[in-house]
Length: 231
View 1 (cartoon, rainbow, N blue to C red):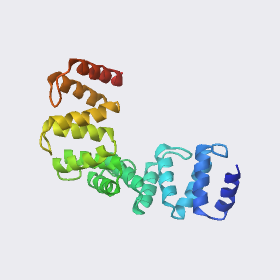
View 2: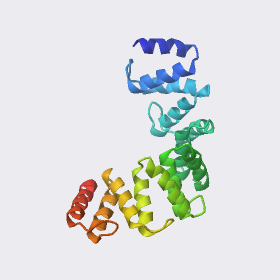
View 3: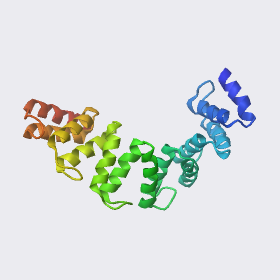
C-alpha cells in the first residue's frame, strides 16, 4: 500500500516508470484492489510518453480485451510503437498479428521480418516461428537448413515444439544430415516436457530400435504417455 501511494504521487507528476509500476499493481491487485480499467489508464499515460513496456502491455490489453474493449487495430498500433523501440516480445506479437491478419492485413513477409528482429534478440517463440516460416516457405524462400538453424536456437532454450521439429528434421534428414540418434535425443527432450507427438514418435523409435536400442518396455511407456497427454 505504501508503494502504491508513492507510485501514485510520482505517477500523477508524470513519471513514466511510476505510471507503469502503478499500472502493473492495478493489473495484479498488488497493494491496491485489482482494477483492469485503472491499469489501462496508467499504461496509456506511460505509453503516450514513449514507455516501451507500457506500450507493449497496453497492446496486450487491447489484444485480450482486458480493461478495454478488444481492438486488434489498437493492439497492432501499440505493438508497433514498442517494436520500433526494439522490444523483442512486441516484435514477436506484431509478427503474430501479421501472420494471422489480426488488426492488420495478413502479410507473411512482414511477419517473418518482425520474427527475425525478435529472434535475433533471442526470443525463442520468434526463433521457432521463423524456423516454421523457412520450413514452409511462408514470407521467406523455403530453406530447410535455415529452418533447422532457427529450430536449434529455440530448442536450446527449451522450446518444446522447436525440439520436436528439430527431432523430425534429424529423423527425416531434411535440412540436416539424417541422424537417428540426434532425433531420439530431441524427441526425448520434447517428450519429457509432455509433447504428445514427441512421445508417440519416441515410442516408435524404441519399437524399431532406430537411433536407440530396441526396448519394448520403453516403447509402451512412451505410447501410454502420448495417450495421456492427448486425453
